[in-house]
Amino acid sequence: MNSNDTIAALSTPLSTGGIGVIRISGQDAIPVVARIFRGKDDILKADTHTIHYGHIVEDPSVDKLVDNYVDEVLISIMRAPRTYTREDVVEISCHGGIYIIKKILSLIFELGVRPAEPGEFTKRAFLNGRIDLSEAEAVMDLISSENESARKNAMSQLSGHLKNKIGDFRERILHETAFIEAALDDPEHYDLSDYEETLQIKINELKSEMQHLADTFDEGVFIKEGIKTAIAGRPNAGKSSLLNALLQKDRAIVTDIPGTTRDTIEENVSLGGMILRLIDTAGLRSTADEVERIGVERSLSSIDEAQLVLYVIDTSEEFTEDDRQQLRDICRSNGKVIILLNKSDLGHEFDQSLLSEYEDIPILSVSARERQGLSDLTSTIKDMFFGGELSTDDGFYLTGERERNELLSAVRSLDLVLNSIATGMPEDILTVDLLDAYAALGRITGEEIEDDLADRIFSEFCMGK
Image (cartoon, rainbow, N blue to C red; front, side):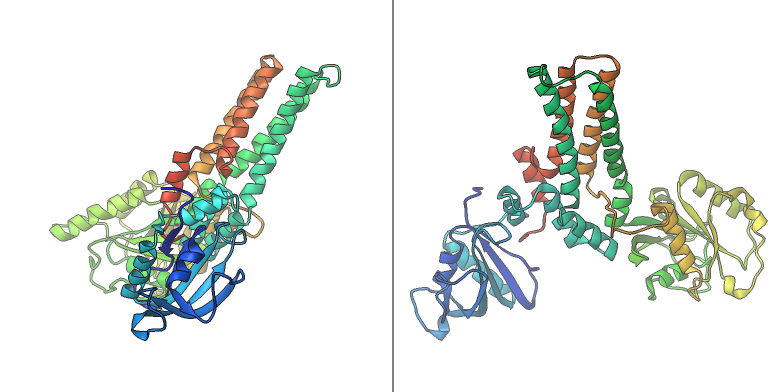
């Protein structure tokens, strides 16, 4: 693979649709497309950011022969450097038939253009300095966003929020490093007396800000990937009704017969700006039915792996000792549990003193069938996972584990600086750890990154992006 090659790929899904968009980038992009394009305009002379109507032809040597036409197309010409990759880019908007798309791509490849690797267009944007690595990774976050909060957070990163923060951290570290180096080289003009006390204050401020950013990672993952949420309880407690209520559609079968759900059912729902990855589990009870028993075992496994458990209690039925023990086991093994007193619309009085041992666990009254109490449930989940506030308008959540790890690496290097100050180490030792922190931060934005890491990051991108 050569970064100077001209590359091409389909940027829309390979499936039958209204249109397909083929993207070509590189120094030969315009000449290659000109060879197979026939229209009124000479695209070799076309201005940048213009669109041209015509046809793709199978045999460039045959002119104005309708039988030689492959498809009717629009050609978008974008000249460097005002393009996504900062190279010449051509986009062919053709009809969205799979055969047509493959046919046009094959004609392009026959003329010496190479198929693009996954993420190679964005990689070229990074290598050519249009975006940094954190912005490149935000591209995929934006594409895969499933709700408004995830979209806003990805857009914030793509707009340079993280890049600017990291740049500020690096600039402050570099300033202190340069001052120490200058003082060591020219002690007559730069005084290091009492400097270490000042440096301690600045390093502690930096550490606090960097740690705060790293600490947003857990919330960022919940925004990006969703909260794995198991709906648990005894058979016929209303678990499937709750799933349907949250989804606002009849996804699970609901009957009055206990044990209707015999396997886990998984669905994603956007709730109050959050993504819940819902798992409706089989009712928890002892059973001689082999199929139901397997379902219960799968349910227990899903509950153990869940980040949140919604435990549904049927308030119209007696809360038994088995129920109590079941709830104890779930609360013991899961960090976050919400108890839902279901069927509140039926007017049954439930003795909440039976749940007195769960004073630290939220207990809400709901009616899954009537879809009552869901707003309280939404607020409670926000409190548990986001401190009651889920807003990316002014704030920013870190979503990449790689970025979090590099931030923590920088924090550890700053800890070493503080330790060196405390133990009276020479000033030149301080600069070693300061520069280690500087380098770790640089790996977040790609200013200091090895080629194999860049290759691995971009290989996870979708084709054509």
